Image 1 (cartoon, rainbow, N blue to C red):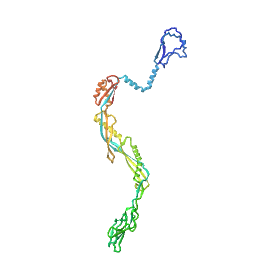
Image 2 (cartoon, rainbow, N blue to C red):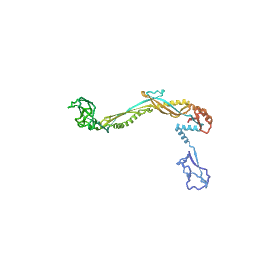
Image 3 (cartoon, rainbow, N blue to C red):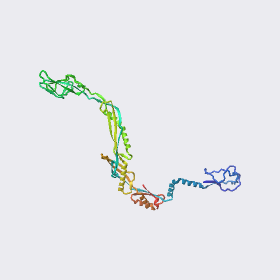
Length: 449
């Protein structure tokens, strides 16, 4: 736009020339004066023009005139052309909103909740979908061997050693007598002596007694069994038999303590080595699982540990070596969810009729896992599926609905819709104040809530 400033026609009257320059005030601080007059270089000084003096008391009137600039229209058209496809939706919206009669219908359809139980088989090898089978496999991992040297803390004791010696038996009877092996005699110190062999003692003749020697040992171990000579000296077990030890019993030893590998030593080292192996094995198993798989059974680990020297053996140091073998049965959870959803959708149609479909993803839970065949590793999965189902007309049905209600009043259209199967409510919103729906079905949109 351009503007220039002109003055209203003035009545000519002779006045004195102005002594000060004329100042014109305006509220338009940013206006531009454009004209088609010659440039200042070509224009003569303003004093060269004849002026009409202002009459005393005559106010100065300023009037602005705006002229249409065709270049602005050209610029606007170029902007539209450059915008291209981006301006098309805006034009379409303006066109449909302000130049056509449109209406929007929101349908509130029947919703129900369905809960069903299913049974599937998790099998190794190829799964037969028609037989409600899903793929399963066994994952196994063996960890590297870990070794640790330890200082033993166990204390062992040697068993007490029994003393040994010899007993001499004398027979006063005029006939041969026998002392059986295992005959127990008691020394003066209370130590019990047992014979090791059976001996026959010759008969005595009145002046000389028959005699025989028998090896023996103390029943109690330890140094207390080292009895001195004649600690046993007197009649014994059979009439006419006299016994004594003519020499000392020797070799008896008390228990001796020594360092050994204890069970606690082995268990502590094994636990220290096993803890990182458990995490390593489980991480390896998880890494072998595919994104669609989940665990069917808990992780089972078998630990192999060796201790050298063995537990209980005499040693000040020992070496513990362990490794672990872990396994887990996994199954294709994605396939299970897919089969469950398919079966759930079929049951929805069978129970409620056509047009009903799950509103959201079906929620499934594995209630029980049973091993049916350990040889072929076949598991039975008891699954519960639950979800909300909603009546959802097809695209063709929605198109037919727009044809049915086209041109009818809002009240008539609502009545028509509420008499249809699966529709429990309808909200009709014309985009203007009209109480009648458009006659053109294409100008009616329907959404399902």
